[in-house]
Length: 130
Image (spheres, rainbow, N blue to C red):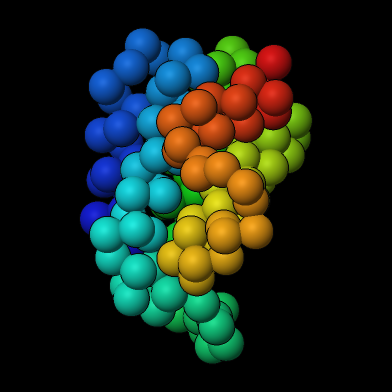
């Protein structure tokens, strides 16, 4: 979780603060982590029974989601505690999380063309945050 959070933060830092690219880069780091470490990704995000009983694990999960929240808040120029920011951050996470699992579970063969992550992530960021 710490490596994932650090990668997401580093991705955002490579682009102008508040840009759609910074938001998409957070998602790209998430997808890249899933692709390069599918076993760890499944361990962290698979069956989570009992995770609610581990305060350290919950905190690390909140920290990862916090990166998404911060990127959305900066893009929307609103505080990270704003309900609209939280709702949109959850939408972004849902898209990227689902995309990541579809990739590592090899379920993307139902689409007729390869999905290029960056244009996909930019389109999702644009749709959710503009």
